[in-house]
Amino acid sequence: MNRKLIAAGVATALALVLGACGGDPSASAPDPNASIKLATRQTPSSLDPCRGNSGYDLTYLKLLYAPLIDTDPQTLAPQPGIATSWEFAGADKLTFTMKLRSGLTFHDGTPVDAEAVKASMQHCLGTGLVSVPSIKSIDVQGTDTVSIKLSSPTSGLPGYLSTRLGFVVSPAALRQYGDEFGNHPVGAGPYQFARAVPNSEYSFTRFAGYQPVSDPAPRAAGIDIAIITSDTALTNALSSGTADFAFGIGESAAPALERLPGITVDRHRQLGFTAVVINTKNHPVDNPKVRLAMEYALDRKAIATAALNSDAGTPAWSVYPPGATFHDSATDNAWPYDPDKARRLLAEAGYPNGVHVRGIAAAAPPFSTNALLVAEQWKAVGIDVEFTNVPGPQAISQFVAHNGADVFSVGWPSQASAPLNYSALLGPTSYYRQNAAPNPQLDELIAQLNNTYTDGEQLEVAKKINRIIVEQAEFIPLYHGPAVIAYTQRVQGVVPSLSGSPELAYLAVS
Image 1 (cartoon, rainbow, N blue to C red):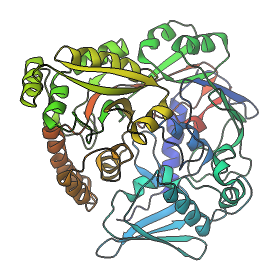
Image 2 (image 1 turned 45 degrees about the horizontal axis):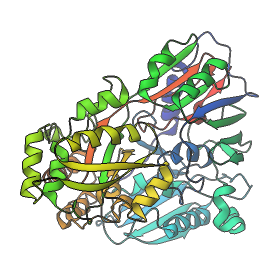
Image 3 (image 1 turned 90 degrees about the vertical axis):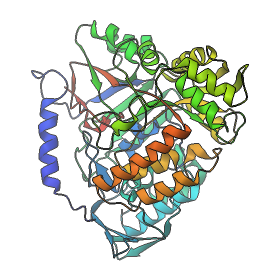
């Protein structure tokens, strides 16, 4: 599969988007000497792309690191990044070759070349956070070619190379800082790290030596992000001028923001969804009938409406929402709300008098709110769960590394690549499934999915995977909600992103 794209056409399209989106159309040109002030509840777990475990990291990482393969914000289609072209070679497609852009440097002045890419990928794979077991070797051919040898078909590899595995870090900085690299991050992205007070504020300055690997070039002199823990405080920051732009806002806060003069509120469609993931090795959720009872006990639309305080949420039944390339309409209403059926399933599982499960929730809306709503509906059919609220990165570690609960209320930032998405969420090396019982049927189909290279072929395999998800309740999707941002009239360059992660590098202020 040859993914050679025309960067000039992409640049033109993005220029049109930038001209049409964000801020006051009558505002003056962006001030290249001005910094933009941002506010959010979303704090990163690490600025090392290969040591963090939170989806919130990506917003920050995209400032610091240039990806090997970039994506169009509005479609998530792959486009050139550090790699100008790439392809799976050979009849078996077990060699993946990338040609690299020349002349790029990291923030520390060292060259971005094939050896640096290899070292960065080896660092990432070595941490264990990103697992691609099919990678046999990473070979360098001169300064501008990287060849990856695979042990089995891995059509999702370009997707991996557009996120953590493909965020190229400086090998020199890795050697200098070792395990402390996340506190001294060095990449080749449009902004470089300035300072941070963890869980409080993060500052980045424009990288003067940035050579665009894709649009945009950095437009603001700096980006200062304040961590604000409530929607009320975010609203106050915008109304007082303390912040120019806010992201990660709860949908329930949008009406109050819309009433503020001079504030624009945007709701962007995103692929991601909220969910309850399951450590299926644990008793009693090792029983598929218990898990199916959990599914049928939930009124997803009511949960979405209550959690978001609006009708903006769409019930989720699998990993892609309606309108997405890989949406499977056969999964719609897969587990219709049926409390009586949930009770019957519990009785068939051997729990006619109910059952207790342990729960963890990421301590941030909407995940903590979802947990309360889910627990209430489960209790009505005899499933007793009390979710413990734990801050996001710690909650993930407690659920995954320490097997501290049976179920976890969290979100999933779906990827446009079906092979990557299903592998990362449900595959045998999925981060979330370290305490999940093996499912040979699922693993076989995910391997098949990684041996398909067109959307049509991938959709047919995805449909088979979805049937297993529906029949065995491997996880509990809840709903798709919008990504909500708000900004003042000074802000320019707002671009909707299907990933749900705002494109901060596009922003500037007049």
